[in-house]
Image (cartoon, rainbow, N blue to C red):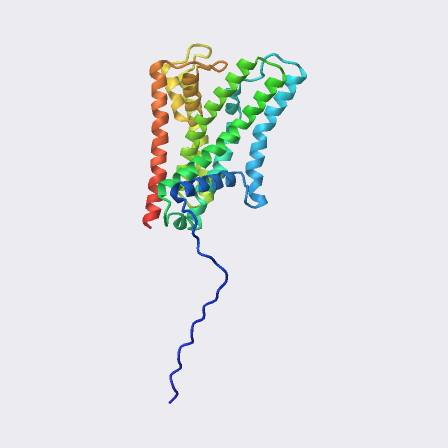
Length: 299
């Protein structure tokens, strides 16, 4: 009968790790770091070269037309801008929608897909910290996408020696409009992306929601308001609520008092309705994102 073998003695290796005695920065610092990291990732910074192609290509698509307009204004010494900067985003809605569809899943779906979300939610960050950091990063990336060409137009107007006061006012109002649009789109895109870990589903769903809503809203407006050239009917005005892009167009017209060419200005009652719908959509989407991560945190 063989003798029982004794267990092998354990060995401790000193590999040079030191105990951390520095300050513990806590939730706020972690949230800020996650926010900055997510904003960089939205443009592929810190990721592979392939990840940079789509966001930077879309950013270039937004900036190049503005740069061309600046060249024309300066070459022809135009005293007025070719386009009011606040209307620029409306011309490139497709590019903005594609950016949202491509980058919202990157920020919200990736951690769900690879289950790395459980590491973030372990502690000390709360699920609301994570959701807030991702949402603010997506808003910031959209503000850059929309605001950079507006800045190019502003610099071009100054180089063309157009009126400084008017150009600065238009630039600042356009930035406010960019923030309004970015907050609404980020809330909607973030909710859709957080709902599924599958990137392809999220991309398709975001594009479908933005495309279908804008098409339906445009068709409804055209059908209701068949009197071309006449005043827009009340029902047609409220049909602008059907799409995030048209909703923000009307809301910024009401708040900023900048009426686009061929546009209309809402009454006080209509403006309040649009503002309330805007706030309600953002609030519901933010609540939905938070609830989604609450479910993930519970397992």
